[in-house]
Structure formats: structure tokens, C-alpha cells
Image (cartoon, rainbow, N blue to C red):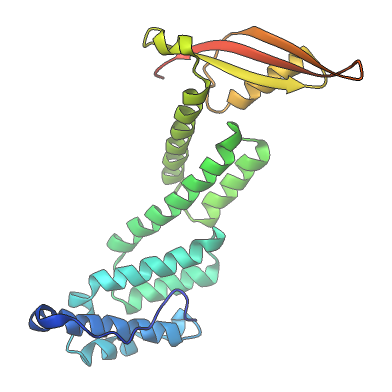
Length: 249
């Protein structure tokens, strides 16, 4: 399978490495990784083969190779997550990899959550680029959290964190100069929208962009209204609306 496992011929650990045994540990971890790289699938490598690779260098996999084995597991986990989901085969491979590398759940479960949350958070950031979550985006994120096998609480925390970041980015661009000197309890934001249909639809477009990130806006004032024409005919309405919202929620 090779990717994401690698083989290396390097065996230069220097005097300190030879004295403290890191050369043997490095050689053992490289041999184990070579086994995985040569296999068609992770499940083709047995625990006996991994133990043998360690024994050849007088290295106990459980006691001496925890860090490099965790590194191998993390790389394979990230490789599995490239398509933002875990298939049943990949779940089986990961369980087998944990077993042959003598890794327990106390180390691997937090690692899984860390990698999955990073991917989920990146997907939320991408979905919130236009400052709103459309129904199809919400459906996608729901499928994604299932595909990543994230616990509901973990996924909710990741969504809340990503939404807070997006809100802060949005406030940085939408807060007016007046808002910068308003009392700390409030912020003034300006939102822009457009519609070929009506002024009301243009205002709705402006508010729709902020609905996900700034749901606490209670009232807005239209501060600018523009009608664009094409050959003398109304083409679209463009509005700028101003609203206040609490600085902290």
C-alpha cells in the first residue's frame, strides 16, 4: 500500500543514539513501517511480524516504540480521512493497526477526535465563507460528522468554535467606524444586500448573510438605497442596512 507509510535506509543515529539505544529503536520502527508499506492492506501485517521486527533489534514494541507507533497511526488516520469519511474497511484497518502496534484506546481515541475535529472545523469554515449555512450545507455537515464518526457533543463543540471564529471575522469586516467607539456593550454593523425583485428582498438578502453569525440583530435601518438600471429599466435594488447587536452574548 506504501502511502502513507515510508521506507528509509538511513541508520545514522550518531554516538549518543548508539549509547542510549535510539539507533535500535529507530531501526525497529523503520522495519515495522516497511512491513506496512509493503503490505497490500494493513490487515495483512500480523502482530507476530511486528514483534519480530522489534525483537531483531532487541526492542520491545510496547515499551520502547509508543511514540513512533503513534506517529504511524496518526499518519494512517489522516490518510483515511482524506475523503472526509471513514469506510468500514478503514475502521477495521485502524482497529487492526492499533492492535499490532500495541496502542490502547486512551491514546488513539483523543487522536481520532483531534484529527476529525480539525477536518470538521475546516469544513464548517468553508461553509461559512458566505456568512450563512444553507440547508444543503447543514445536511452536508450532518453527513460529515457521521462519516467522521464524531460524537455529537464533540461535533457540536467544534461547530460552535468554528461559528465563533467566523462571527469574529465577520464582525471585523462589518463593524462600522461608529461601532468602534460605541460603548463596549454594543457593536454597530453594516450589511449589504441586493435583489432584482424588490427593496424588501434586498434587505432580506443583507440579513440572510448575517443570519447564522449574527442572529441577535433585532432591528436595522436602511442607510443607503441604490437602484441599478439597464437601458433605462430597473435591473436590481442594492441596500446598505445598519444594525446594533450586543458585543458579548
